[in-house]
Amino acid sequence: MDFGLSDEQLQLKQSARELLAAECSTAAVRKAMASEDGTLPELYREIAKLGWTGLIVPEKFGGAALGMLDMAVLLEEQGYAAMPGPFLFSSAVAAEAIIRGGSDEAREKWLGGIADGSAIGTVALAEDAGSIAVVAKKGGRLSGRGIFVPYANLADFIVVAARSEDGQVAMTLVETKAAGVTIRMLKNLDLTRRLAAVDFDDAAGASLSGGESLYRRLLDVGAVAIAADSLGGMQRALDMAVDYSKVREQFGKPIGSFQALKHAAAEIVADLEPARSLVWYAAYALDAIPSEASRAAAMAKARLCEVYSRATDRAVLMHGGIGFTWEHDIHLWFKRARFNESYLGSPAYHRERVAQLGGY
Image: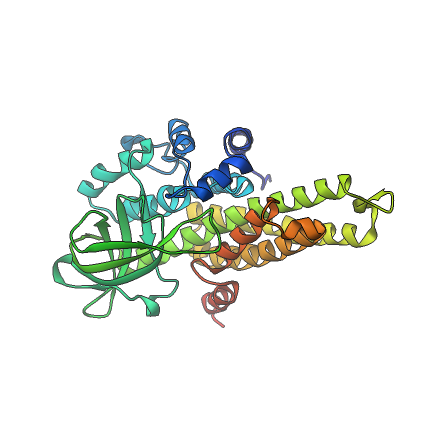
């Protein structure tokens, strides 16, 4: 039995690698980091033409109707390139929210726009239902603050996890231009991602069906998406460190010939390869094995984000002094690893979740 990617998925992976190598170089990433909105509009238009933004959107709305495993393949390559922009939060998580919980009207209004790149969504999700700070009043009106909302500055709508007056989780779609919505951009370590705090002051929203089950599904999708991004970033950190070790010389020899550097690279590989199967299985479980999806997603998020941070630590050290400078690109992945580690729950949080889902 073949547990690898299909030929179509491998082709998607290769074409994504080639496109991002050409259109999302580190120079382009730094351009986005220096811009006000933190994205590359030309690149986003290009990937929309290729159908990436509508990858999981149903065909009737202009999408490709593929699954989370296909999405994970794309997100891995975006992590490899440290691609900036709202793709992960819009085309993976927000799109999933509307597909699963949106009314016919919401699907008609937003899914076609997500698919063709003319609409962008984002999510305001707390990692735990007990820490939700937004209150949903009768009629779907929201009050409270959503923190760490990715690319709220670019989004047309936000999928918000709120707490209803009877204590239940209420999922609500709010347009960013609605009255009572205030967006304040935040400063964060990873400049390849932009975050905002969003205040809701009796803002009108449209309820999404599913309640807590939809909320849990979005956490799982987000966890797998971040894990896939981490997988690609970890591979890039390894490749950069190995390439540098081959050309940097000390005592008349490439530093890669020294045992300490060999061990550091081997330790990254030893973490990387088993982690790859965790991501692929978790994405597959979201598509095909609902009973295993939450546990697999938590395992993937916990493991990938932990080893991604560890790998970038080692990669920086393998670069020596230059690895600690702004001018060298390795810090792009080092900082992105820190964002991934904290967003939607730390590794410790997800290990606890794995234990709870396993009945411990």
